[in-house]
Length: 84
Image (tube, rainbow, N blue to C red; front, side, top):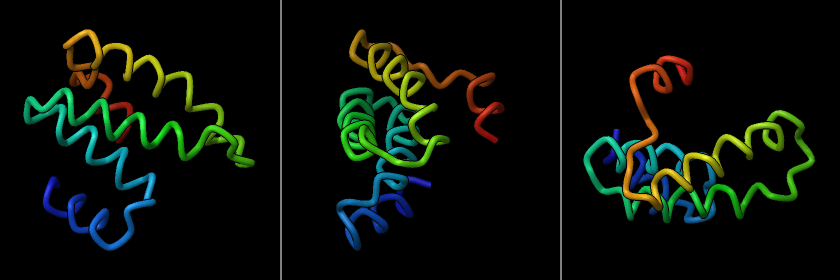
């Protein structure tokens, strides 16, 4: 998953969805600082989104970011199952 995210961001550094996916992949591989950077990029890119499903998901992403900044991985098995 991580190589695909890296390639997507190499092709388009503004790809917020790829940044979010890479955040999860980085967290799962122990790179919590990198995951926090990517998740912050996703949040910043989508803060003014006109799409309700994106705006509605931002509080959850902010909570994940806070967890990452505390040095913890928010992507538990339950969260990953919920994400599908």
